[in-house]
Every structure is written in structure tokens, then in C-alpha cells.
Amino acid sequence: MTPTAKRRLNSAVCGHVKWKVLVVLSLFVLVCLLLNLRSTSRIFGKLWRKQRLNVTVESSRCLLQTEILQPIPNGNALVVSAYLDSRLEPGSVRILAIVKRAPPLELHCYFACRNGLFVVASPAEVNLFHDHFGFPWAAAHILCSLHGGPCLKPDKVALVSSERSDGQCFVANIQNAARPQPELNSFTHNFGVCISTLFGGYNNVLQFTQAMEMYRLLGAGRVTIYNSSCGPELDRVLAHYTATGLVEVIPWPIDRYLTPSTGWTYPTHPGDVHYYGQIAALNDCLYRHMYDTRYLVMNDVDEIIIPVGCASWACLMMHLNRIYDAAVYRFNNHVFPYTAVDDFGSVFDRWKGIPGRNILTQVRREPNPIFAFNPTKMILNPRQVVETSVHYVVFTFGKRALVSSSLAKLHHYRSPERPNIDKRDLIIDPVMWKYKAVLVSNVNSVLHKVGLLR
Image (cartoon, rainbow, N blue to C red; front, side, top):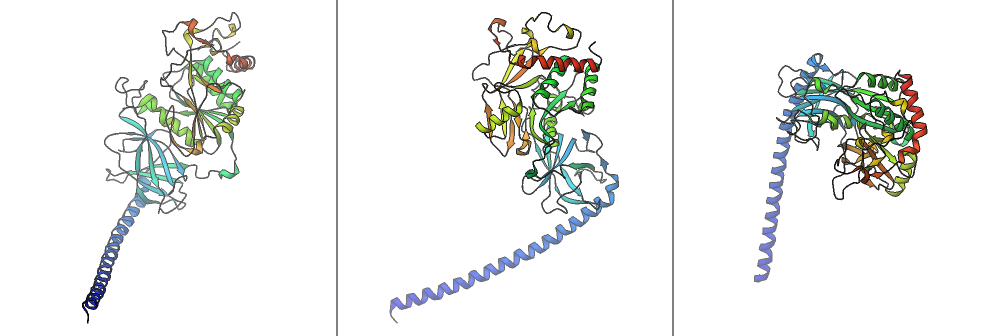
């Protein structure tokens, strides 16, 4: 045999041996993995049965949520509401809450299906909202995954703190479980307004009534208001609008459990949570009306988004969708300071005894400084949004667009942002007066019905 043939034979033999060794090693590894998986399955199966048995037996001790902002037993969290969210795979139950940022919150999720029994699903995933401004408590999503769970559409979710040993739990009803199919396009309202929050005995009756009537004229079918406290006259106005169906009042008793801040930054503005839990309220409104309202307008009670070339939001949105085709539209803020009112003689004499300010006399706005932060507000498609902050959307599936002020402006009727500007240097902008005749008539009607105008 030639040397070359011997080398080829040796190479073939070695290759055959290596192949056999590789097969044997692969089989060995596979057997080990299977044995380990079988052992792991037995362990998790025992844990599943144990947790399911414990919670089922002790479910009678669970605390059922009966109001918004209800504390979890020993959980350092206030539950706002719970919603089924199937937009991300796997689907989940999204519990909106306000939680203590430290130490990290550890909870477990249990679902109740049609048989009424609570069965374990998974540890809860607690995600703090992007904006908490340094305060000790923050808005959060508590996510309970439906992946591999006992049912795809549970009607209740229970939260159990891992620190508890007595099995007590907190149960919330799950909303949006019976949402309409998107292709049906069946909305109760084309436009809804989300306002948060009234606090400090808010009693600016005249401006509030003007805002509600402007929202109605622009196309709003419902205005959702989170109310911590308001004055007696405004309470009568709220009762009137609630009876007519325009306003939905959500009680917001956050000061029963926390010390809310009246400002934005910590510790400059002391408190447990930013601005009366504003971000939690806005996100609750987002999910509450995700499937019954085509568009949500997210602004404060002293703000109105006014179209420039249109008279209504419907006209404005048709125009914006042609230009931008976005899910979220942001509008530049323009301050109309109440320190720069104009005298219109006896035009508004009937309103002299009404508490609050008259926005129709605020026709001058401050020029916006170039390159400065502008606190925009939004009109959005709620089905395309996962998380919103006050001035922008944190997580959306769709496009975002900043609307040119030549198309629409956010009118902000408030104290001056730039008090050093002389009144003569403010920009005269009487665009609101195109609504004056019908607005004055509608406001007078409401004030008369609630007994504030003779």
C-alpha cells in the first residue's frame, strides 16, 4: 500500500471514530436534558398544584375592589383599575396602579374564570411609568400574563403579595373583556375628553362651563373628569352635566391614602406622588374608553384645542389624517394670560356674579420662545396607545405628529408663563370669538338651569 493510500485510510478511520464519539455524546446530553426536564416538570407541577389549592381554599378571604384607588393588603400599592389587553402577544391583564417605588413590589397573579375558582398564572410584572418626576410613589402597570394560563378571558384577577403568609389577596374586576371587534367600528362617541384632576376645592365655574360648552361645540360626546375636590357651585354644575350625559365624574380620593403634590418636581414640591396622580388618571381614561371612543382629547380643564381653518374636531381630524396619517397628534401650547384681559364694555355683564374667569376676554397670547420646551397636549387613537404621559405618548403602535400651529392651537387660559412681557407685546388672537354667539347662549342656559344666573 502506498503512503498516500495509508494516509487516506487512517483519515477515514479517524473520521468514522470521531463521528461515533459525537453521536454518543449527543445522545448522552439529550438523555440528561430529558431527565432534568422531567424532574423540573415534577417540581413545577407540585408548586402549581400547591399554589392553586391554597388560593382556591382561601379565596373567600380576598378583598374585592369596590372603588377606584383601593389599597392592596400589605402591598404598597393603590389599584386604579384592571383591563384585558390582547394587543401584545401573549395577551395580558393590565392593572393600573400607583405604587411605592422602593422597595420593589413583588406580587403574584391569579385569575378567576367562569367556575369562580382562582388559579395561579404567573408572578406579576410591575412596570413603573416613564414619568414619575422623582416622587416616592409612581403610576405603574402591573402586568399579569395570560400565556399558558387556565383561561384566555378571565373575569377577575387576584393579586397576592409575596410577603404575606396568611393568603390574603386583592381582587379586581377585569374590564374590556367584552370589547367590540375593531372591524365593526362601533363607537359610542367620536370624541371624548380626558381631564385630570380637579383638586383644592376647584370652583372656577365660569371658565369650566365655557370649556364644557366649547368641547360640546367642537364635537365631544363625553368628558371624563377625575375629581378629588371641588367647590359647592361647581359641584352643582357637575351634577347638571352628569345628568345630561356629557360629563362622567370619576371620584379620585387620592388624598385619603397619600399626600399628593400640587407641583411637578420633587422635592421642590413636597408630597408622595406627582400632581394628584395625574398620569394614573390619564391612563385610566385611556383604557376605560379605548373601545367605545374613536378619538380621545387629552388636556387639562383650562385648555382647549382650537382648529384654525375648521370649526370642529371632526373636520380637523379629516384634514390631519390626510396630511400625517398618525395615531397621536400633538398640539403646541399657547398661553392666554388672565392678567391681560380686554374690556368689552357691558357685553358680559350677566356673568359678573359667577365665580371664575371669562376666557372670552382673554384674546391676547404670549409669543412662544424659540427652542423652548412646549408642553403640548394631544388628540389620539386610544387603540394605538399603550402608555401616555401628560404632554406626550410614551408607547404607541402608530405614528406621532406635531401639528403646525397654522392648523390648530392649544389655547391655555391660565396665569402668565412670561409675566415680564408687556400687554402691548402680546399677540391678539380672537379666534375663539367665532364661537361667541352660540357659546354665550349655551353657557347662559346651563348657569340658569343650575340656579346661578337669574
